[in-house]
Image (cartoon, rainbow, N blue to C red; front, side):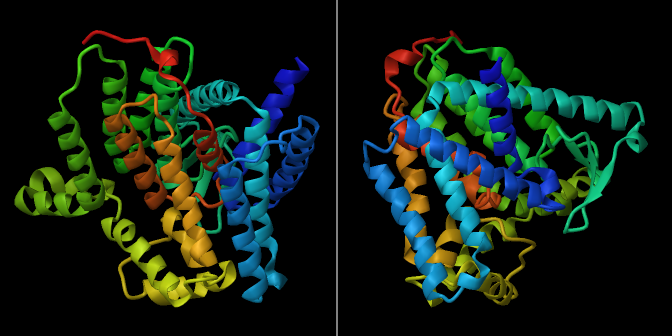
Length: 402
């Protein structure tokens, strides 16, 4: 019982530091939880002797942390140490958690919590949109003046309450982790696949009304098909689907606008569903422009804010979304270690076929360019685990006939 309670409390603190909606209102509780969790995981790692073996990945994490410290010191941002302390705490916490919690246990905890959040989101959706009980839920306004209806375990934005978003600040992030849940269920857990999880998470992705989520779900089904089918899926079909999803992901707005021009009676009303292609496409360009000016140490986390505003004025950008290019722009050449960790975590999954690993890399790159995950502990945990766990093929022999 105590072990279950400990796991629930720890995972709750992880969620607080993983784009939890109320942290956009006041992030003090998340910072306190992160501080406590980092100490607990650090002590636990020391007691379990987790630092006796040093791997290449440990060296990458260490260098990534050093890059933050060097930028903070040499860029003269020591007086604004808070964001750097947060990044270092996230790194230490994720690393120690990964070293002391088996991957299989993490998978089961994650899947259980995502199932719980899915139920909570459906209850909130029912209460607000079917039963008309929105006035019974407390409301919060975040720093971007977005109003949330809160059930604490699930939220809804007041101006789009039909979109399920779980405990996260944006429906797209909920869609991302639901997709990760499907991938874990079908490709990484050692027990037989629980198809109920796959169906539930797929349904919840539809309930987020996230355009990117829909496209990534198609790629996820491609992964499931290749991983579970008894018959070999055509390579041409695989690559064609990936290419189509790539083009749609980055040029969806252009396609909808074109269709709205050609058939306005059908498509003009759904242009609101599109997410700005210019934001996705231009954000990495803005970050690389900043990195070119500060290649070795980066602009610094504080200075990056003003540099980004200056550079982004040249483009049509609504917000910062690219995690992959954020780190080179803020901490310089050491920031490329994050991208290296992402590519490495996919390359290590030797039990998966090449097309499945390519599809997985596609999902990672899309997710880390469409959403800001640089303060997201859960995403960091996924990257850490995938870098240090290399399941064998015999653990995944279950197949289904088409």
